[in-house]
Length: 602
Image (cartoon, rainbow, N blue to C red; front, side, top):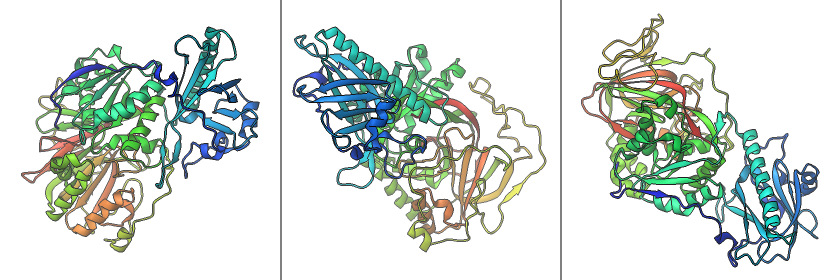
């Protein structure tokens, strides 16, 4: 990984929002038709028992009936227009006084709110106070298909009393009520949640200025700094200047000063942070520090996965950044599986994303030379590697998850299910796929032999690992011993690729394991055998963009859900990557540890 030269610790400026109250900069209250203020993107499932108020043209009456607060405010720009405002546990509804319900009413859904604050007027001459609420609803893109989160600032003027302090106290009362209702709404819709970050949440924000196209600092300035300020999240910015700088920072940091560690970079920087935490003497406590990620790199696989888990539509680039920034501001936590990997040298590392060997790893590392073009680097790398397709000889073994073991609850994507691509249909490369959760079609000649006799398995003790931190790997034995008898052994094969992934996405636009979840306790193991043609491999990769590769019926593609695995490359040269980072080439084995870390998922 390439990093910038200058390292500096920058206290983030938490703006007092004085600028937001200056004359000429106040945002006028907009009163579009209620239908236009809908905060849920097309295609997203609505909770039938909890209709979205922003979709009801006459919703102001229903909202007022159960309103926690009601009040009268004026336009922040000039104070002439008057508005009746009501707060429920689901929406902040604003109706222009004198206007009929409908066109003059806007219901701002609290599910889209990141923060609310009150502040006095500038100068002291005006006794008014101001109430500001910040929303990021899903709205249709301008002159484009699809939806994206777009910023909406609601600013109201409080001047019902002649005393400035009384007006400010009233605005602060509303700000607290909106904040409390927003958090209650987040808990009600949060899904599988193990907690919430403290409020206020003190964030260590780690930024790699050289990640992706080198625009991480610009992304912070233009989007993230403002969003964290709106959400009242105090943060300190650390800019890395070399490889493993973030690893060193979190390994030595006094974590009692921080409530969360957030990365603005690609997946590689989070790999450093996770391993820095696991190298600490207090690793059991340290790894429970909530982790957040904001996409600023080329692949941004975990950020895309979090967006997918939240039920949000597919977005990429800066729109993905805004979506992940919104989820970060909401501050809900979910468990995160980590995978312990033992390398040939005895080194142990922890992974949150993937282990790759063969085609995928080759493209990831060889495309580094095209880093300046952003995500297009992977397209270029894929084309180059397809032209010179390689095969690798090796051995593979794994501990499958049995059909009787408990499976994670299904999660339905909000996007319509994608049919098999036309290319996939026209270039079918074999028999119909077995879509069972643990198995995909094998090569016509069976390559798997399954041992059925269970044997006791002791925690792995590899030379050089005695002082390693982290939980014991009870499913693994040393690399110089045969795998336990209850493992499945793949006969020695020539492979095009082996990919073990534990998140849904391998890149922003590569949905490698759509059935995966951050806390499902599984490694999703894919491998492609020798014999697949270049067109058929291209077909699989294109289908993987939509997560439909398992429906292509390709006999060279194999899939299993596993708890542990061992990979032994026999080819003298090759590339192995962990979370997109190249590691030493040689035998490697892995075991998943369910819910070992905590991830901010919103």
